[in-house]
Image (cartoon, rainbow, N blue to C red; front, side, top):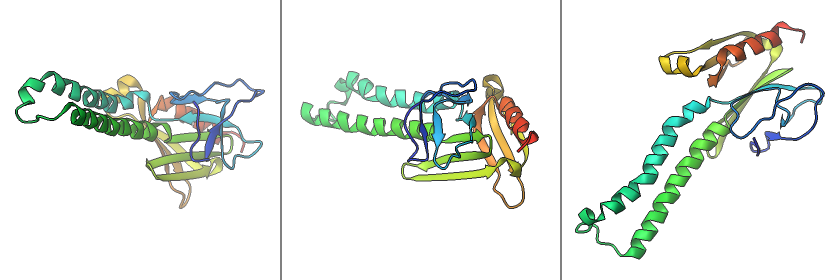
Length: 202
């Protein structure tokens, strides 16, 4: 995993006294990541868990992107049928293809960004939820562990059960907003880890 979230959380490389695991760009569930930090993190605060949507949730848009990539190739192979209707010069066709693939690349980049930068972090002190709602829109929420009252998860449907991902709901006290890790991998494990944290000394 590399890069940063508009300066909110970044990756670092440093040795830690406790056993850690490396977070890569494709990581969706990392326990004790050794190369992740975020803005306003306390010096004595450690990240216990990094959560993204399960990798399998990317399959629909990846398949759609592959279809979009293949469409011009299919049209080109059937060009003899379209020639009477679309008799353009090779230069115009090249510009059209380049513009089309630029749009497809933009679609892929946006979909990957929405997956990569929607991150939940569980630390020894709080829970932080980074939500990217669009290219120019983001929302960051956090709550202290001592305000967490309950943690549950749900897996609705056979696909979620087979691939073991679901929605983790973190209920907070009073007027605090509830948190949700949407389509998170191994939700039972996440609930267990957070449960241990809120049940231990704070």
